[in-house]
Length: 406
Image 1 (cartoon, rainbow, N blue to C red):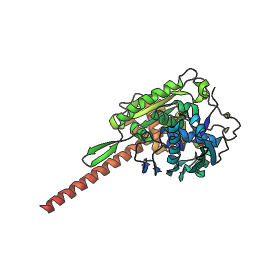
Image 2: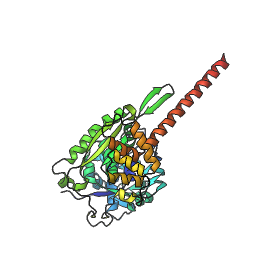
Image 3: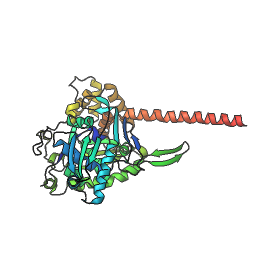
Image 4: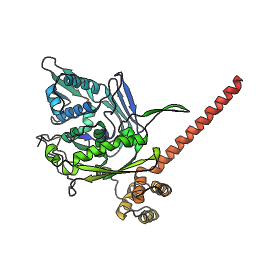
C-alpha cells in the first residue's frame, strides 16, 4: 500500500472554493464573489486543478513538520508526490503555481464558521517563495493566519491525498470537496442546482434580456456537468482494491445517489451518501501518519460541535403535525430543539403548498425546515418585486423623456 497521506482541511476551505474549474483569463487579475459573503481575489492567473494538488502537497508537508510556516522542498519532491510529469514544462508549471498562490487573497464577511459562531476574516495563502536557481530548491513561506486556521480548527475534515488525486475531472474534485464537507455527520444533502453551480465555480452564460446582458447559471447545465462527476466518484469508490491503493478509511468510502425535484431554474438536487462497506462505523480513533503529532488529532463530528443544548418541547401542536407527516419522533424532537417554532411552522406551510410534485414528502418537509426554504422563497419574491418596481420606474422615466423630446 502507498504511504498514508492524510491532509487536515478546515471545513470553510472545502465549502468555499480555493481554486476554479475554468481558469482561463488574461493573468491580470480576477475577483469572484458569492452570495454568502465570500470574496476571492487574485492579481494573477486563477488556480486550477493542478494548482490545488500542488497546494495540498505543500500543506501536507507543513503538517508533517508541525505546521512550520516556512518549508523547503525540491521540484522533484513536489512533482513526484503530485503524480505530475517530472520534466521541464512541469518545472515551469510548478513555479507558475507558486506565483498564482502568492497572488491569492480571500475574505469571509461574517461567514467563517468555527463550529460555534461566525467571524469576518481575511488573509492570503502564500506570503512569498524563493527558488534557488543552482540546486532548484524551493522555499515556501505560508501565510501564518491561513495556516493557523487549519492547525487550530475544530471544524475540519481529513482528506486522503491519494484518493483525491485519483479523481481526474476538475468538477469531480470540487464536488468531492463539497460532499466531504456536507456528509460529515449526515447522509443527506439538498441544494438548488443553480446555487450548487456557483459552489462548483461553473462558468455562467451571458444572456441578453430586455434589461441588458446578464450572467446566468442554468440548472440544466449544472445537471449535465454533474453526471460524469458523480459517475467518476462512484466508480472510484467501488474499485475492488481501492483501500489497499490509497489507504482510505472504510467510513470515508462512499458512493452517491441523487434525484431532482422542481422545475427549470427552481430545481433542487437531493444527494444520498451510501457507504461502500455497510457495517463501517464512524471512528473516533486518531489517524496515524508516521510520527506527526499534528495529524493524529481525533476526528470530530460537525453535528456534535454545532448541537445546541437539549431543550423541552416548545410546541406540542408542531410535534403532532410533524408526526402526522410521518416524521419519526426522534427526528421531530430534534427539529423542535434545533429550529425556532416560527421557522418550523412557516416551512410546514411552505412544504404543504409546494409538495404536489415531490415524491418523498417527509424528506422534503425535513429539508424545507433545515434549509429554510420559506425564507429563500421570500427573498426570491422580494427580489422579483424589486425588479418589477425598477422596470416600472424605468418605463415611466423613458416615457417622460420621450414626451419631453416631443
